[in-house]
Image (cartoon, rainbow, N blue to C red; front, top):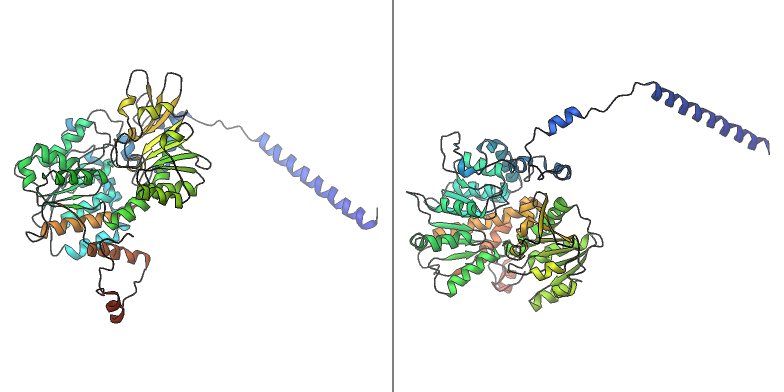
Length: 527
């Protein structure tokens, strides 16, 4: 060994001795330190302060919901109140002004709900802009609007906008699981007659709708519906009221289908606006909202990893397209079922395999429905699914999955988390059913505020248009939103992105045969 090599070896040996000494000193310090027992007692006392039901709340549920303990729209106040005994129908509550013209879970949550609404307003600048521009004119003065939608912070911004524009509003929920209790409380505190709470029974659901419609000295003249339940109730139970309605605004596939059925049968005696098929609803809410919220809902409820999972999405409309794009991006193997050859061809061109549900039902890990139809997933399909298959619905209605067929003596239902049921077959196989087959994203998670601003602004303009339209402009039929209004809604949202539109020159406008201010596309244009 040369002299330099020997010197290097001595340095390494010395460094090793220093390292060993440091380790010894560290261990000595640790062993000399007094041992401190971890105290669980206080923590357990704190934990047991929260109301629980035996068998209904588990540690896994608490952990899974920890991410919602903030001022998000799935906040902990809503979840914790679900376990309270009794129904709000049995309580007598008043707001700070002494009014009891509402029925919510707990009016004391109003302050928290107001924060939720204020946060939503920050990302709904276009709707707030419309409110500021039009509230001086009061275009809805005299309008008595009865509404049935999801009651969330975003919808609350819409309701308060309608009130600011001069309308009187009475509201109920279109889904028994989607109501944010604190938001409903905030609306009630602000004077809105709201009848809704999370976890309603079917009887509660119809009772709430009836309370909105049936009130002495108050008769609605406008309807804002999501799903058609409110319209159906007024039509069947209060035909004289229905005949005096000046306009109906509907935003769902299911509700629009019901309206067209009434129109075809010659029983629609009021004009109705089909918001669902307007460009600003179809191409934004249905597509982009579902693209982001499908994963949120599935992960919050099941903690599933999508990489390599086999998923079948029933329906390749805008909702289906959004769901598939999100699932594909995470590495899922996605199959599509479709009845429409055009949508099926789109799915093929986007790289998905189009199949019949029977062909893949035994092998898939997740089944998602988004067709707006009924009995898309039948008991036969459910019987053939593999163990731990996740089943959920992204369509509005709760008819797509035949949940009723699962409520039989031979099957056992086990609630494992909020909105998560394991349905267990006699051989031990279990299917994971989310939200009892109801709308997944609004029942189990949240939806993006900004995209709901687009839909809410469209709904507000549709109500203003129908309410102020001169007699004869709209017959007793179903109409699409005028193209000019779609473009106006879009233009209100562009400043959020600092987007700058190009303007046509006079020569260009003449060449294209267009007005420089729009509309820029014919009604038959497909975006």
